[in-house]
Length: 143
Image (cartoon, rainbow, N blue to C red):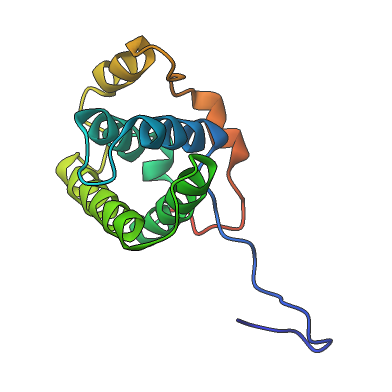
């Protein structure tokens, strides 16, 4: 943590995933079992990994934002603290890394199918390009 002369935290706030991504994670966690990653959860994570923000931020910042959103979503979904929760969240982070590096970095993959698939699932809101407005300008965008 970096502090200024008055002792206050001078570090800019971390970039966070947009609210629609947070809601998708929460919805996917509510419907899954604690033991394994479901195909629905993988589809949600793949959609997040193919979001437009992927090209604007460093991979480390995107991963940190995902992990923060995942913990918040688990809390919102009422998943109790403990080893089962920790195991599930670790598996979901592993899936995130697989999906993030599976997809082309420059967005050459047809993302429309991923978004249509998510939007077609009952109870899950679709991704929107307006979610980019919810990002922090203090995060490190890619050059």
